Image (tube, rainbow, N blue to C red; front, side, top):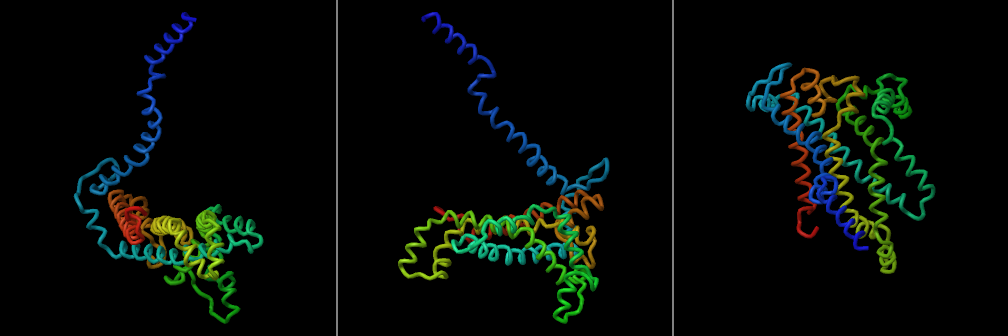
Length: 309
């Protein structure tokens, strides 16, 4: 028995001296994949982008030019891109937060029939390729009289529209496309929040004589605040990051009078189409600053920095 114990101690001593069994090294081994991924795919690209925004980057050579790339941003095309992205973001927020919230309440109701069918159906567009969706929307909102949208408004005596040739209707088409794609995703977020609200709260409200509207305003909305803020935050980022939808509707990054040009589209135009990576980096960092500022303001207004919230 004594010999057996001595043998075990010898094995443990041998293992403790080995790198494979080193307890001090183990935590670093476990976090190493995350650190390597973070450095390679986040820290390094961000640092390179910051550096390039102060350089003139040409094939085979770079030159430090200070803030010249940022000074070049003061032009009408950049202002147009910011205005387009801001309008698109505001309109999608006005649609893609209240509408999925109300639909989620209906889908969470015990009186609703076919809930699973509607949940699945509304989520399907999110699985559809934006390339396919953009192509279909382009055909639906074509300027031809036989296009589906023009045929529909023709029933009401309205003349055919050049949907993608006018700034107001082009923005409408982009918002409709975003609504069609992301409505189901936001419904899922709100449904998960609704199902975490204890039913006892609604039963107590029933006893107190509260009607449906009172329960919605005084119980549902306050308890859904964290989910609403999350949806608001990701929707702001998604709105300012929109690019592919516009690219597909206009067969590229060239729309009439830049009515479909977004900030990300401007990055693509300058950085890749014109091979001006320095200016593209400056636009990207400006976009990052704008979205971070807006989200910090909305998080401050909604009380997310308040102690105890």
